[in-house]
Image 1: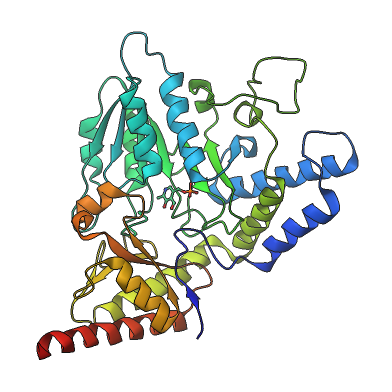
Image 2: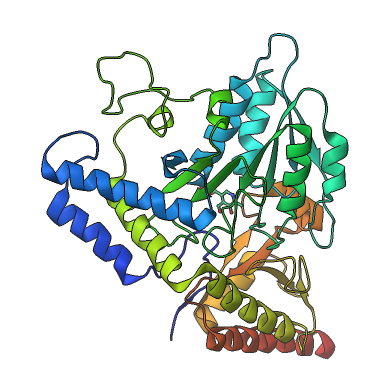
Amino acid sequence: MQRRYLDNAATSFPKPPEVLEGVTRYACELGASPGRGAYGEAKEAGLLFDECRGRINELIHGEDPNHVVFTLNASDALNMAIRGVVHGCDSSNTKPHVITTWMEHNSVLRPMNELVSRGDMEQTRVRCDPVTGLVDPDDIRKAIRPNTVLIAVVHGSNVTGTLQPVAEVGAIARERGVALLVDAAQTVGHVPIDVRAMGIDLLAFPGHKGLLGPLGTGALYIRPGVEKRMATSREGGTGSVSDQDTQPTFMPDRFEPGSHNAPGIVGLSQGVKWILDKGVDELWQHQRGLMRLMIERLGDGMPGLRLYGPQGVEDRVGVFSIRIDGFGDPQSLSDVLEKDFGLLTRSGIHCAPLAHKTIGTDQLGGTTRLSFGPFTTEEDVLFISDSLAHLCQGQAARVSSC
Ligand SMILES: Cc1ncc(COP(=O)(O)O)c(C=O)c1O
């Protein structure tokens, strides 16, 4: 049976062959640690890093490639951003205040809760629409206080696929002089992002999902100037200004202590090149076409199936959360989809407990999630919908015969 990977929201698969070639070439021919030697291989590895930063900067319309800081994953980038802003601001008179939403991943909720429990900051979590998962930018505006230093919003929900109105939130953040952090874990590489036009100060993202790089890669884009308001969370060797026993202040070294995941970053660079060559607008149109087909098919002949989140393609990405009556525990649906149809999905709470509270699935064990990538095809969508229709009709027949 053909196995179809539908867990691109966790990490993308397959990767373009160029990604693997990049990793292999680095490992077999270079091997040196960038910035840690003046010999040819180390210099070439350093140039490959510059190329990767340049490609990411081009993709997100950043101002300076040196403001693309490599991280371990999106969680690492989000921690760096949240802790950096909270600990970097002057808190001598008032505790900093941070705003976020109920649709966030634990990679935002947990660092924030930790900082609140240590007494380092206050937080407001803005509720989102129980059907669409959308945040109302006006609710964010109303939550701003004189001591608000950061607004953190997820661009695309990893539960409902909801695409938040980030540019509108960005305009509010700019107007009020508050830094905006966007969690682009489910959008970078899939959805066109322009950090300048969208008013984004900090963009956190994994390298291993939409950017098609290997696991263990990620980045934080820091708008030039914002780094001056941020504290470092980690310090260490950078290969630069080695005679100095304090962390360099220049970018990206200020936020990049220690040796890098060089094979991963070289692979990531190839993933980003693949996206730039195809064109993110074209990939997005392809994805929207698949989403449209999926939504049409889910609305047709599927008794007992419920799709959560936006019911059209306008405010969403290709992350679909569903439940089918008769499958109490979402994992039992995932198990049947794998065993009988070769569909690889993910069930549960997806590290976003408040998002499930928002849509009312927290007490039901969550949802079953199917998430698309650039290699998902129309044929996959037709197969998925036929499989789901088969299960729905089977369940409906069982109920009516009882
Ligand atoms: C919305 C969102 N934010 C953050 C993360 C964390 O990403 P990573 O696993 O790269 O740390 C994820 C992962 O699924 C996510 O979906």
